[in-house]
Image (cartoon, rainbow, N blue to C red; front, side):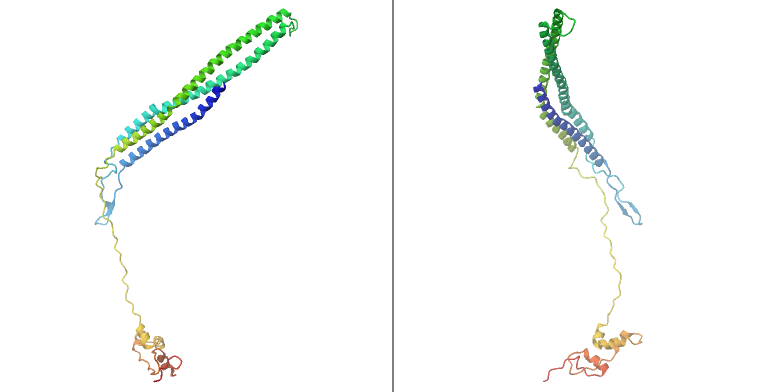
Length: 313
C-alpha cells in the first residue's frame, strides 16, 4: 500500500490549502456582508442638526428637518445583493470545495482501513507459514502433540494449513480490491483538484458582482439634499481703553538728573511739575556738554573732571 500512502500524504498537503481557501472565502463573504450593512446604516442615518443663537439669545435648531446623507442612494439594493452573493457562493464555490474536502477525508480514512488490512495479510501470511512448517513435520511422521498417531497428526496439520491458506487468499483478495479502490478514488480526487482554480475565480466574480450591484445603487449625479447651515461666526475683539502715559524725559534732559531727583524728593504737591518749572542751571562756557554743569551748579565746584574743555583758538 506504499503508493496509496504517498498519494494520501500529497492530497493531505493540498487539502490544507483548500481548507484555508474555503475559510478565507467565507471570511470575505462575511466581511462584505458586514461592510455593506454598515454602509447602509450610515447612508440612512440623519445628518447632524446645526444650532445657532436667535435674536432673543436662545439656542435653537437652525435647520430642524432631518437630512440623510444617502438620500439619493437606493439602499434597498444592498440586502438583495448580499443575499444573491451568499446563495451563489454556497452553490458555486463553498459547497463544491466542502465536498472535495469531504472526499479527501473519506479516502484518507479508507486508506487507513486498507493499511490495516495489509497488516492483517502480513499476519495471516506468517500464520500460513507456521501451518506449512507444522504440516511438513507431520509429513515426516513426527507429531508434535503427544498421544496422536502420525496419520491423525498429518490430517490435522493438513486441515489447519488449508484453512489458514484459505483465509490468506480471501484477505489478499480483499486487500487488492480495497487498495485498487483507494487508488482509483485518489486519482479522482487529484483530477477534481484541478477545478479548484475555477472555484476560486468564481468566488471573486461573485463577490465583485455584489460590490458592483451596491455601487450601482449610488446616483452620484444627483444633487445633494439641501442642508442649511448658519453663516460662519466672526467674533468681535474688544481691546481695553488704556489712558495715555507721559514720561517727563524732556524735563529730565533739560533740568539735569540731579535737579530732577532733588525736585522729586521735595514735599511739593506735584514733583514732576516742580521739576519742569525749576530754573535752569548755569552753563559753563568751557564745556561742550549740558549735563555736567547742572551738577557743578549745585556743588559750587568748577566742572573740570566731568566736562570737556574746548580747544584753544
